[in-house]
Length: 507
Image (cartoon, rainbow, N blue to C red):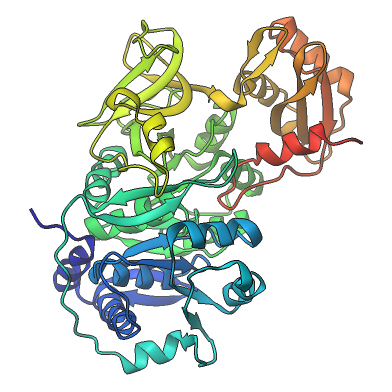
C-alpha cells in the first residue's frame, strides 16, 4: 500500500478549499493557499537537487513556514529533519552531520547560527533563508516561492519510509534522531482523536512550538487530518495565551505542566469569556494534581494528562467524558499494547512500579545511525520508554518518574516526582524541582529548587519540616535553594540536566 502524508494536504485542500488552516499574527492561510505554497517550495527544493530520501533540515521558529517546509519535503519523498530552534553550537553541528543534511530551510538568525559553525558542518551545501540575500549557497525563501510552479505531483511512498527525523532532547549525551515513518504518523493521529475527539470545528492553539514533536506531528498534522484550524503563538506568553483563547475562540490546546502553572497565575476571574474552550491536555512531564484542579476550577475546562514521547506519539490518555483520575496519565489507547515490567523484562502485578514498555504502529522505526541504541530500546520486540509507571486495578496508568532521574541514597530509591508532588501541596510553592547531587557517603542526596509564589517567604528549615510531616525521612530533601525561576527547555519543561549541573558545581 502506498502512503505519503503530503498527499493528505492535497486531499484536504480540495475538501476544505478556502477554509482557514493557519492563523498567525492575524494573518490567515487557507488549506488551498497552504497547498500552493507547499507545491512551490517542493518544486524549489527539486530545482536545488533534492532527491527522494534526502534529509532536509527545517530550522525555523514556530511559524507557519514550518508547515510549508514540512509538507513540501514530504510531497517530494524527502525526509524532514525538524530541529529545535533553540539548539545552537556543537549540538546543532552534531545534528546536521549525524542526519547528513545537505540543505536547510531557515531564517536570518538560523543562518547566522549555522555560519558560526560552518567549519564543523561536513555536508551542508545550500540554505533557503527567509528574508535572506541571494548568493552562491543561499536561496531567498520568498524568491523560491515566487519563481517556482504551484503544480506538483506527490511522490508515492511506502508506509515504512521515513517521513521525519525528530531529535530527542538529549538529556544524556548528544540527542538521538527518532525516525518517524508515514505509517507512524497516520497511526499516531488515532491517538489524538481518541484523546480529544478532534474534528473540523476545532481551533487548536499551538502553544507548544511547531518544531517540537507534539507541536509538529501531534498537533499540526492531526488538525490537518481532521480539518480544523491551527492558531500559532510563536513564543509562549501566559498573557497572550489567555488573550488568544478568547480572541480566536480556541476549543483545544496542549501544553507542559510549567506552562499551565504560569497560565493559572496570569488568569483573572471574570476577565475572559471562553465558552468555546472545551479541553486542555498536558504531557511532557508530570503535573501535580493541585495545579490541575486549580486550572479546572478557574477555566471550567477539563485538563487531562496523557503520555507519549518523541518515539511513541500518544499511547495513554483519557477522553474527558470517561471520568478521569487527575493523577493518572490515562488508560491504554486503542490498538496499543503496554506492559509494566521489572529489570528482567518480566511483567509485574498491578499496583507495583516498573518500566513501561509498549508495542504500537505509532512507535518509530529506530534511531538514525544508532543501531546499538535502537536494539537497546527495542529489547525483545518491545519499546522500552525508560519511564517508571504503575497500573492500577481499574486500568489507569500512573507516571512515577524517569529511570535516569531516580535518586539513589544509601541504597534506597527516591522518586523526585513524589517529593515534588508534596512540595506542590505547600501553599507557598509556585514551582519545584528535585534532583540528586553527588555525596561521598550516601552516593546521592536530594536537593530541592523552589520558586515561591509572589509575596511569599519561606526558609529551608520550614520546607524541610513541611516534608518531614508527609514523606519518609530518607526522601526529605537535604538542601533547599530558593530561586526566582527554574531553567526551562524550548517547550517549557523544567531542565533537570541544567539543575543537576548547577547542584554539582562548586559554589
